[in-house]
Amino acid sequence: MAGRTWDESDVRVRANKRGSRPRTKQRPAHEDAVVARVIAVDRGRYTCVVDEDGPAPRTVLCVRAKELRRRPIVPGDRVGVVGDVTGEPDTLARIVRIEPRTTVLRRSADDTDPVERVIVANADRLVLVLAAASPTPRTGFVDRGLVAAWDAGITPVVCMTKSDLADPAEFLSYFRDLDVLTVTTERATERGQRPEAGLHEQSLAISPESLDRLRAVLDGHVSVFLGPSGVGKSTLVNALTGADRATGGVNDVTGRGRHTSSSALALTVPGTRPGTWVVDTPGIRSLGLAHVAEEDLLNAFTDLVPATADCPRGCLHTADSPGCALDAWVHRPEASPAAPERLESLRRLLAASRGETQRGDDEKRLGQAIT
Image (cartoon, rainbow, N blue to C red; front, side, top):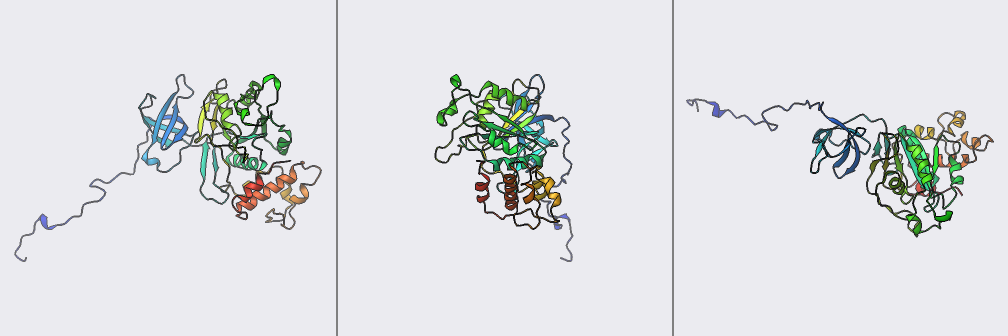
């Protein structure tokens, strides 16, 4: 080797695994992206509406860009879209940007699950839909919905359907002292007869007067309908929008509705101002609040918050908390008749958020209706 001449073949250079050209971290700004609204999500495909307020809105099918990674895209999102946005058949565009959200409505599987699930974005009204009968309305679900709405900065609305089957006045009195809009709907009947609870009631149409009341509440807003299965969410959406969402009845054995809608869908409402949307969501049986801090959960019970000023520092507001002022407050003359039930509901939610109740037990107790 001493007399050998060295050349370039004796030098070993390991090839760069990432390629010979360094990859830039700069991403295109996509300044030419068109702003669209996501109206449906289905297995990695996003249905968007381009130029929604223009003379010729177009429905475009999109996929997500790689740079968005795992950021969730949900109905109601306003996104930047590039590619073919003509809306012609067999065309595909690409979502490259998610515009800043004004509101985010979230839930978790239960009160201890750390994983948040975004239901809808940019909504300004949450319509909690319950039936006056078949299935029985549950105050616990509405309390959870009110907490989720106020945590997201969304105006809550309680909508009672099937008021022709039972008088919803007693149930709605539970929310009388709260800043909550309420609206009732009933099904159209022949000769003013009151239908009996049963499967045949599902075929009855919503009365025009009910639709007018609900349309006035929704006019000019982006509203998301949320409620258990079988209460008539999709029936209302079909009547308001002219859509053909699948509807179902109520199980005669369990008293619960059957799941029919499998995904959320945003639709426009004819006869209203531009920008009026309703989002129909699948029926849910649990509305977890793991993402809501205890302080925010308490603040959602606006009728009970003033009494906490007299509670000792660090009060947990449980039934056995020494000196908790809530116990005396709910029995004062100025308190609402529903105050004791509201306090019990608050304490169940606080216990569930601390993991002090088993999964399922809290929902069963929260599901008790006012009788």
